[in-house]
Length: 271
Image 1 (cartoon, rainbow, N blue to C red):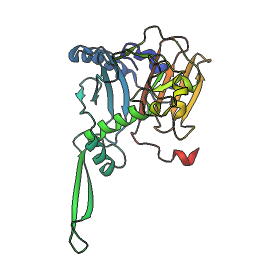
Image 2 (image 1 turned 30 degrees about the vertical axis):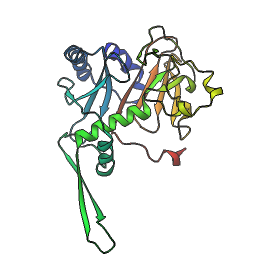
Image 3 (image 1 turned 180 degrees about the vertical axis):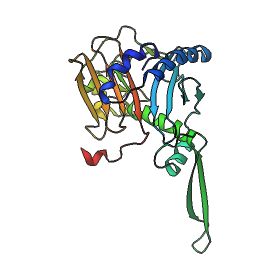
Image 4 (image 1 turned 90 degrees about the horizontal axis):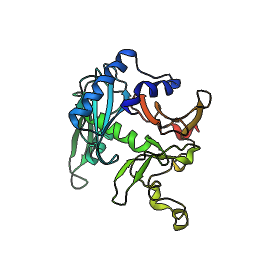
């Protein structure tokens, strides 16, 4: 959610039961303005909070000229001092998936260890024990990347793509509706699988992302109208703790994640 409307936005998603206290909100109002100036971001978003056993990670994201590509993620323990997270690489994602299990500890230097036994050469050769180590900061970067990839939401028309491929905020946006009107704000995958007939109904300037209604398994999103039907709220059942809001007929929208950073792998059996 945009740092300029943080107080207002937090009230709209408070129905989930997860929010920030007054001290944290006040600190964020100040520190995110300084963060935007120091890193020369066009705008700063408060991404959310990942709960740890010792400390909690507060996450913010800065956006540049291209909203999708020019993106940096930072984390803090006190909502004042921010540290830059490394970008999640393929090798980092693989190491984290093998090594990191259970809850976050709350210490970026904490090391997760995993041992793999591999046979070298032929059948009669000796077994070799391979150790994989990854720190919690890398796990944090991968978790934020995966949540952004699988659960970040924007309404249809909220962003426009120029003929040069630049993704920017659509200032004249004000649409709402059903699940078909909401997109994943990440690189499109399902769009390339659509037929020519299906593509003919799409506007390339705004329909360049994957629709939430195409997600598998079906039913992984909960859509509700709250605050006397004045606010549309989406909740992810795959990443429990992610809440998106949109005020119909206005450009006001955003999402926040407050959870333990673990994916609900039991969802297909719960539907």
